[in-house]
Length: 308
Image (cartoon, rainbow, N blue to C red; front, side, top):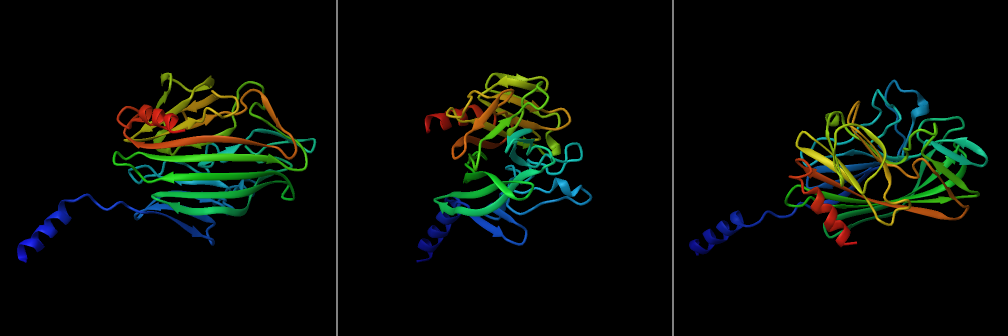
């Protein structure tokens, strides 16, 4: 009997560790929905208004993702940075928006202001070891009229045995009550706008890698299928879905004053969404340990394509 008990104990100690469960935790008072794996936060969706202390109230924002955490438990994103107060974690915005005959933007605060507001949750679920949620937001002009409906859907995988994690993001943007024109070129010189990652300060000087190789300086308007920033033993890549309009997209990639990854859409051109119609933009984040090579970024990209 004692031998059987010792055998059970031995097998229990030597067997594989139980997987850490992924769960969703909503905090209505703080306006956050957080994905947690085991005891560690993975990322938070900010559905409530946010404003940092001492910052102009015009910078109030909501409906974005921050923080995103790396495998080392440290943040990968920054919010309200001093050099660009309008940057906020992982966000999606456009520097030129024409709607109702008015030229405005969602990138910087503008007059009249146009920004996102939380409407409702469409889905919150756990499937296997994957957290899934979908949220509906409204683009309101000057805090009143709704000019666009935005649906953001995320699927967040558990961390794999090598420390990698995949996060699938789908943005669906529908024009309401009239056409919506988006452009990423307010000056006519460079394209930016769409999904953007403002990296944490640790990524200043990070290694910048794309499907075409390593970059030795900041770049704009160059087409890539994916790009990665790695620094201090962790990194994150953004993969763009082949069904994305304008694919392969022109990118803005920086590691100078800070780390920035922005697969720009529509780049130097403009895109018009007719009233009642929608555009869908799909991406995958790949969060990893180490750099592109040790983190297996190229293999993760190939696996993603083969599984689509």
